[in-house]
Image 1 (tube, rainbow, N blue to C red):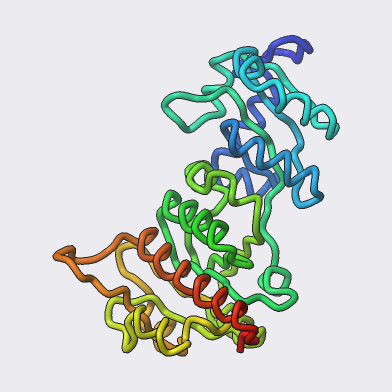
Image 2 (image 1 turned 135 degrees about the vertical axis):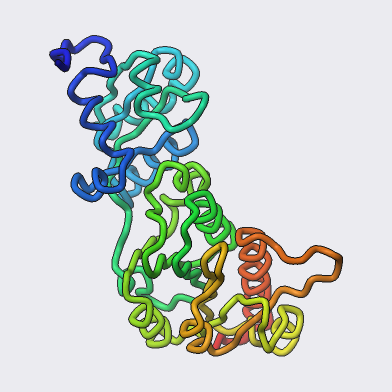
Length: 286
């Protein structure tokens, strides 16, 4: 039987900890509308987003040792009215999916928004992941999009949940920095991108353009949505066919290919650089 709440140090059997543990599963996250952000970097980003009105943190679980190492996080949480719950090392491990838990876990509200909300205003650079299955890659691509200054990330099809613990950790806090829009209907997501004036660029090995040519001819300077596919199978044929351009990353050495996150970083940064140059010339992105 779960232990009663004592108001002291919570164990892995304390009801609040037992309830939070259910958020390690996608079904539990969807039912509760909440997810776990683990580690000092993710917790700091979650609290910063909550302070800016861009997210909500419901509770911070922490070990005494972790609070000793990160007193600023406890002060920030309390200033925001976020309850700070002291837990045992075993309780922290029960809420963790890592080999060496840091002892800091925030319970956060789900971050996803609609595609329409994510693309509001005048977006110029968007990253769309289609059927991406590996949570580490999803988090890495969200981090790439954030670092390159992208306006939003769209997660199209039946891919990985960006609130998955591995995805959140791989994003290094970036899940809290830009809009995330999961959408099952891939064609509708493509249509909305076009409606917002975005050129669709499909990253594929067999593209009619390579990235160097696309940079030289001005293709990358236009407002764009980059489309990236599944790690093993790439983009579905109908999605590739619907794109305005199919673009490949040139391989100058003997490597057969690049992994998804690396290829995405090269492509998205190439667009960000081309768009900055166009703005620097005083040109309008079109």
